[in-house]
Each structure stands twice: as structure tokens, then as C-alpha cells.
Image (cartoon, rainbow, N blue to C red; front, top):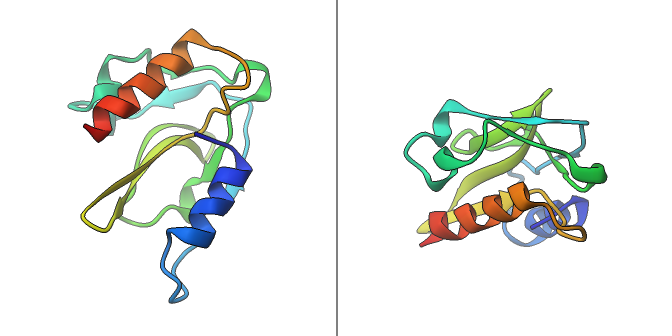
Length: 117
């Protein structure tokens, strides 16, 4: 779960070291809108928007996502919930730091765990 430090961890440890594209951390006020690609995933049952609760939501610029990535919630060119193919599976990013509780974002985390199952 994360913010800029989580994006940095992904860039430094999980993305190709052969000069592949790095994720670019970004922030925008929100709310973040559910995308059509969420249909058929555990994210489908979530509300149509996720709030930026007291600025605790962070994401990446859409143009920095790899081509095979899927953005589930985004606004103004910033994705806060996305997946990227990684090896035999997928890496899922949920861009909320959970230093404060938000019922909507907790449901998003639970949907992410269902996504991984």
C-alpha cells in the first residue's frame, strides 16, 4: 500500500533493470474514478469514486505505467489503483497509506486481497 516510497520500492526492486520504464509518483486531489477495466474484478463492487482522504492517497502518472498495466481508479492522469504483470503473476498497487482509516479504502484493500487470491 502506498505512496511515493512504495513507488520507489517498486522502481528499485521489481521493474526491469534493462532500462525499462520507471513509474513516476504523482498526486492529484481526487476523487478517483473507477474505470471500465474494473468490471469482472473484485474492484467492480466498490463505489464509483475513491476519495483522497486528507491527502493520504498517492499514485503514479498514467503515462509512466507499462503498456500491459491496468488502471482501476484514476483521475487527471494519475492512477491510484493499478496492476502490472510481474513474472507469473501481477503486482497490485493500492495508493493509500492507511495512516488514517477510511472505510472506502479499507474495502479497496480487501478487494485487492481478493484480487490476489
